[in-house]
Image (tube, rainbow, N blue to C red; front, side, top):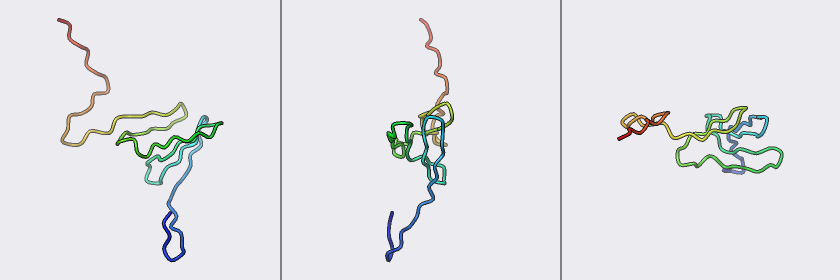
Length: 84
């Protein structure tokens, strides 16, 4: 939290309560922290090297980053290996 002339700058954070954890995110939609229930253990997910984090009632998903517009798309299901 940066201060300017003694006034604190507040960030627009929000918490979302799930059955097994609480998610903390910026209002832009980027998750920053997951707090597990009932232990209170924190998982910092803001710097996962571009990986996407999806939170929902069934759990936490860590997904690969979206492909860039010039790159090859990442297949959702890998192609089966050809048998010789």
